Length: 83
Image 1 (cartoon, rainbow, N blue to C red):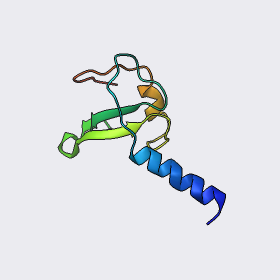
Image 2: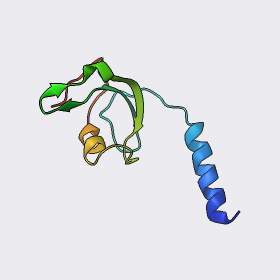
Image 3: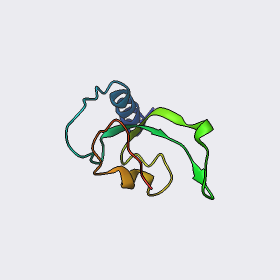
Image 4: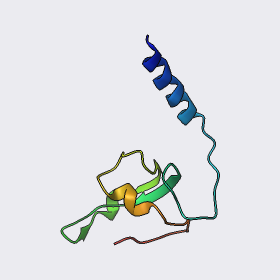
């Protein structure tokens, strides 16, 4: 195991044990948002396969390009619709 491996393990452990707080401001990169969403393809909603309570760290590049970028600046709400 080299120094880079140790750094990766430490980074992963820090992420696993991060304590998140609800904030009253627009979301920024490195914030975590919790989403409910479903796909819309060719104008048809796939609400039967809705994803609920999905945690996403903005800037992690885990979703399709542009998805996380579109969430930067939103504020926590009970529900929101993005089009």
